[in-house]
Length: 152
View 1 (cartoon, rainbow, N blue to C red):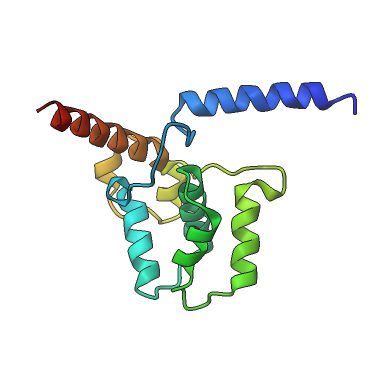
View 2 (cartoon, rainbow, N blue to C red):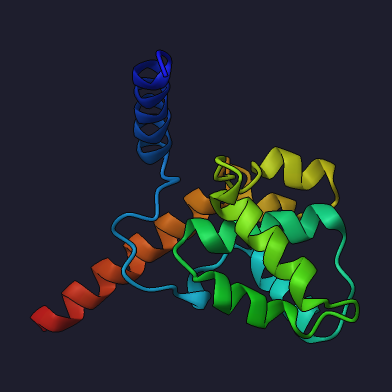
């Protein structure tokens, strides 16, 4: 197809920009729940408490978890506590968000999370544009602490 080189170039530009903004899972060797932003910690606690999440929060949580490197299987496990859990539908939605349709979705920005009523602590994240940025910064701080502790 004649458009393939252009499509590849556009994808590369998007990936480069996303990675510069902290939206890449590259360099994240493990998922650290203690570094999750309040919106994600609260949401996961809600799911585990058998709370039925809104569609926008399901999308936000799923895209966040996939963007930080969590496996589709692990995300599915989290959703099993949902009161309306259906394995096939959940699996389809997770793989779709993860790129099965050709588009890998990024976690919604904090402004979008606030608009959709999915941000429990607006003041805490004032200078954060995206839950992924919050997470990457917290992981960076945790890694720095580990390095300092090893040196002591």
